[in-house]
Image: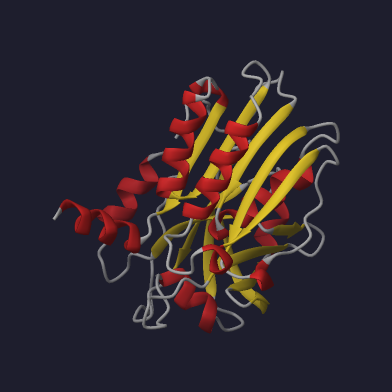
Length: 284
């Protein structure tokens, strides 16, 4: 994570909700819509507004939420007996409709080489039924550019699409810069509203190297962008999220190009098992 502080919601609280709709967005994406009366109090901040998603494990008939909304929630969650502890994962608000009290969650359907779904949330999204219960803990924004920012550098893989789409939509119209978005297939590319002076570059993984670790193609494209055009270190802000190596190595390369660390937000949303296997193989 960067030295920049996140923007916290005015009121930090849990929201209980139920699945009200499920739809396939793209071949590897599922949109799960949740709704409840409690969401009428949800203050959507736009950009990359994120939350902790709590949902039961397949064998759980009863699950218990933490009572604290401060940092103590994590200790309470860990202390909850395994038979009652829900799964917890971090997700971005894909869309929010306050009058309908509906919140959309876009889930990447990660799969193992065998084709089996990987990860509890992907499994849940693929089989979610209407009425299934979830809970959300509001966490606010990671995206927090300095007030003098006039250009941005954005990069992420498919897990970052909701965050980057929200940021592109909410940027001021005069913002310049470059966004690199990596997706698995050409069918996953879509139109995203963005400022006219900002270049959006889609990188399609199966047209580069289908066997590559997710995020590797985006990292290569990001590197080419920052080496081709000098950054204005006084007015540029970078936001790098997605697979762990894309975020951390992208930050290193930006720093080497002169961008101050306090003008970079980076966060590894997940770590690819294939990246770990490659590192282990290289070590031997």
